[in-house]
Image (cartoon, rainbow, N blue to C red):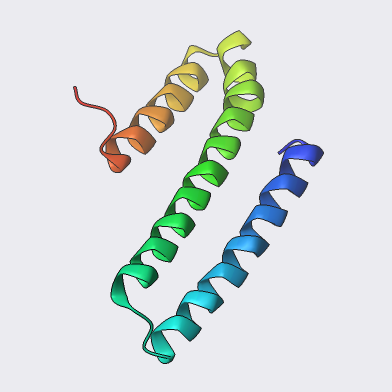
Length: 94
């Protein structure tokens, strides 16, 4: 992972971690359910952003290198990995 992306991802994950602890406190203190759900959604959105950063970095580094490589098996492997990630997220239909 590129160093600047790595630092950004780590900082975002630390922020998410703190946010999750805050949600835990909200639940413990019997906050209004809708308020808790809004905070959970905010964490989900933050994790989606982290995922997007990691994917962009992967495409710009590992995938680009594999596609440029002479080894067609490596190209197919990384393409299949990307397909599996999108299949698992429900964002790809074949």
